[in-house]
Image 1 (cartoon, one colour):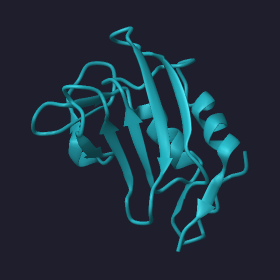
Image 2 (image 1 turned 90 degrees about the vertical axis):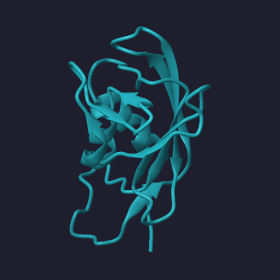
Image 3 (image 1 turned 90 degrees about the horizontal axis):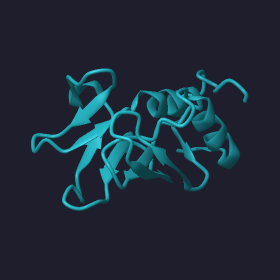
Image 4 (image 1 turned 60 degrees about the horizontal axis):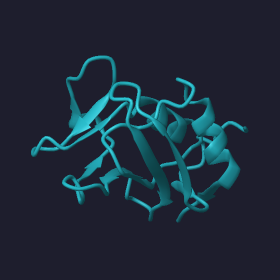
Length: 132
């Protein structure tokens, strides 16, 4: 993977949607995740698509971090959570993705191999597109 061009002041999103699945580290439940391209100025938005949390959307920013043992947890005022987000956020940042929607059918990002590497490879496989 090439280093993202951080001198480029344009924002970037994915060229196309990509999916992955696996088990959560803390709950052991199977979860599916879809990374979807998003318009400029969207940021990284986590969206739950499972009942009863369907419709919950939280931006992946420090303002939504909640205390949770051994992982990064994003939560809204109603207590709907997105857990173990740290490797996915690191992969998006490393690949230069500024705008994407992360759709999840559970409350935990799959752990995969325990690193961000498989997520970086996945993002690299679809590519990143500069935005105006």
